[in-house]
Length: 458
Ligand SMILES: Cc1cc2nc3c(=O)[nH]c(=O)nc-3n(C[C@H](O)[C@H](O)[C@H](O)COP(=O)(O)OP(=O)(O)OC[C@H]3O[C@@H](n4cnc5c(N)ncnc54)[C@H](O)[C@@H]3O)c2cc1C
Image (cartoon, rainbow, N blue to C red; front, side, top):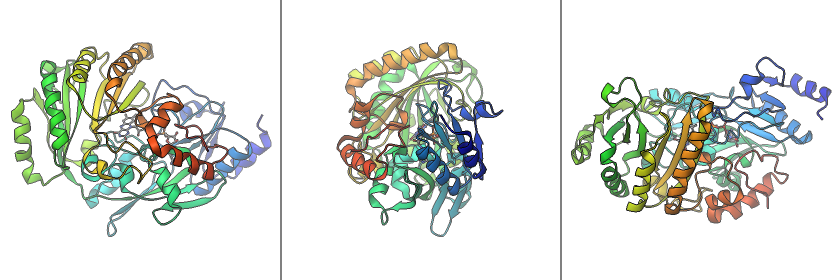
C-alpha cells in the first residue's frame, strides 16, 4: 500500500503533474494508442524536466512499484502503461533543437516524429524514423527504428550520437561512443530496459524533398508483383526504397471511386537520389506493370512521413505479429496471397519493410540490433476501430503469421511484438542477448525497468 503522505510529497516536488485514479484526467492519461490496451496504473507522473524524471525513478524504486515509461504511447503491446504501476510519462518533454552547423538534432525523450520532422525540414535535414509521424521518438529509437530512409541512411539507431538518461539508481548520465560505451551499445536496440532517456542526439541527414508515395496494383497481379519486387529490393541502389503492402483501398480521396474498398497490393516508394533522375529511375518500375493507381512523385519528406496518419488515428484495436525475413520463396508468396485475399478490415494490412542497404552494412555486434542480415521486417496487423472486431482481426493476423513463420529467420522487431515471451525476445537479440543481460545487470540489477520486452539481468 502506498502511503498518502509519500504521494503528496512526491506530487509537491514535481514541476509536471501527478495523476491518480479518480482524477478527472486519469482515464484520458492512461489511454495508449492501441485501443485493445486497458490498464489502470497506480500513478502517472507527467514529467516536465529531467529533475521530475529523477524524482519519479527514485519514488518508483523506493516504493517498489513497477515502472512503465511512456514516450509516444504507440507501442504494439501498450508497454507505456501497466496495471498498478508508476507511469513515467514523458509527453511534455517534446522539444527539438536543430544545430544547422553541426547538422545535429537534439530531441526530448517524449517527442513524436512529427515534432522532429517539423523542426528539421526547414534546414533540409531529416532523421531516419518510421512511416507514421505520430509515433514516439523514444520507443521507436530504442527498439531500432526503421522506415523510408533505412536503405539510404540506416536504422534510426545508426544515426544516434548520444543519449542522456536517468538510470535505475537515480544517476543522470550521458551515453555515447566516448562515454558509457556499453550503455550506448545496449540502448541502440535494447529498448527501455536500461533507464529513462530524457534526450536523444541524432545526426541529421540531407533529406528535403523526396520522390515517393504509393503505387497500387490489382490483386490478380500480386504474385507477379511480389516476385518482381523481391528481386528489385535485393539489388536496388540504396537511394531506392519501397515497402510492399496488401491493402484495402480507403473509400475517399485521393483514391478514385472504382477502387474504393478493394483489396489490392501496393508499394510505397521513397527515392532519395537526385530529383532530376527520379522519372528515369521509375520508368522501368512503371513499365514492368502499369499501376492501377500511381501517386508517386516529388513530395516533401514530412508529407510522406505523415501520409498515413489520417488512416490510423489513435484508439483503434490493433493486434500485431511480426518476423524478420531474408528471402521470399514462391511458396511464401503463395501463402501471402491466400491471406491477403481475406484482409478482414479497411485498416488491416501486411507490410514488408526493407532493411537491407545501409542498415545491413552495420556489423551485428556494433549495436544491440542483431538481425542485420534480414532483407525485410514483416509485420501483419489486424486493425479496426470497432472493439467487437477484436477477435476477428486477431485470428486473421495470427493465422496469417503462422502460415508465414516457417519462412522467417526467428525473432522479430521488438517494436512490433506484443507479449510473446522470453524465447522470442532471446531469438530477436541472437548472440547479443548475453551481453545485453550483463549490461542490464550492471545498470538495473533489480529490474526496475521491466515493463518492456524484458532483458533479464544476469
Ligand atoms: C501506427 C504505427 C506505425 C509504426 N510504424 C513504425 C515504423 O515505421 N518503424 C518502426 O521502427 N516502428 C514503427 N512502429 C512501432 C513503434 O516503433 C513502436 O510502437 C514504439 O514502441 C513506439 O514508441 P513510442 O515512444 O510511441 O511508444 P511508447 O508506448 O510510449 O513506449 C514504448 C516503450 O518504449 C520505451 N520507451 C519509450 N520512450 C522511452 C524513453 N524516452 N526512455 C526509455 N524508454 C522509453 C519503454 O520501454 C516503453 O514501454 C509503429 C507503430 C505504430 C502504432
